[in-house]
Amino acid sequence: MASEPQVIYIPPFANVRLIECRDFMALVPVCAYREFFGYGKMKARDVPLKEERGFLGVLLSNCPADEEVWAVMSWKRFEDGHEEEGLMNFLFAGTTEKDARKAMARMIRFHRMSKDDLLALSQCFEAKEDDLAYIENRFPDFQSPAAGPGEIEANDLYQVRLKVLAGLHPRTVKLVRQADAATDLNDRRKLAREAVDAYFAELAHSWTEDEVLAWQRNNPVGVEWMCEFGRAFQEPERTIDPINYELAFRWLRRKYNLLTAEELSDMILVATGQRLMSGALKKRRERLGLTTKRPPGPPPRDSQ
Image 1 (cartoon, helix red, strand yellow):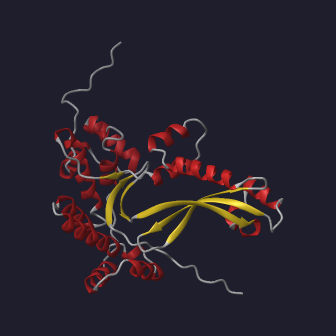
Image 2 (cartoon, rainbow, N blue to C red):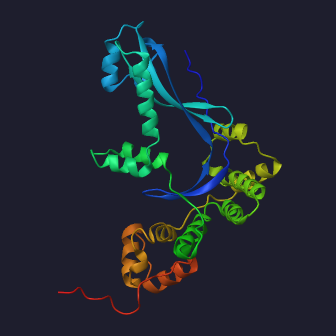
Image 3 (cartoon, rainbow, N blue to C red):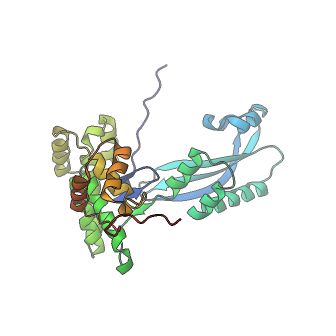
């Protein structure tokens, strides 16, 4: 029997944000959702197949199919009413509703842990890549324009990163900047929504037909978007200069701002595999708007 085609779901998005992760930065669309928690009973036979693995799978294999188990779960509800399941735990024979309520309370406490709490917890055991990815996905490091006299460097870096990512998303970046500068809330929301439209139009080369249709279902578009999508599809696929990306992403992370021009040239060669001489590299970072904090003159010698 032929399996039913998988339905692609793409939620309605509200804006586009610059995100910084452990090993990359990017512009990403952001949607709104609420998290819910609950518990209830179900037959062992009805436990989702994806849960039947590991120690839980062993417990389930020893349960009669008609045995009732307590299920404790979380799920997300998006603005359009679509729901997606989150964590799911099971309590077996001998447990009561009181036990299920306690398990739900523990799940809620876990969800309320801060990013610092989760990172500290990950130091208590050998955290796997999935554990670190969970923390990063739950607390995305969204970047925003910084305000205040002490935030000049952070704000400059934010603008540099937008300039570099404009290589992929020129119209999106333009609208993100306009939304950042808007003082009226309604204007900001309108510009943010237009940035979402531009973002997906500029990804024309990356979309399948099914994905385009799925996005249009929850993110209504007009004739202007279709024209923009068509133009992007006709143009060559855009790319980002790897040296510009490396400079913008790791300027402070790897303390490039403290290196001499020669040292920076060597580091960029290692990171990108491309050699750019110190003079050309200096002009490149100045065009981007990156300023060095290294004082002029030879590097200080280490004290003996």
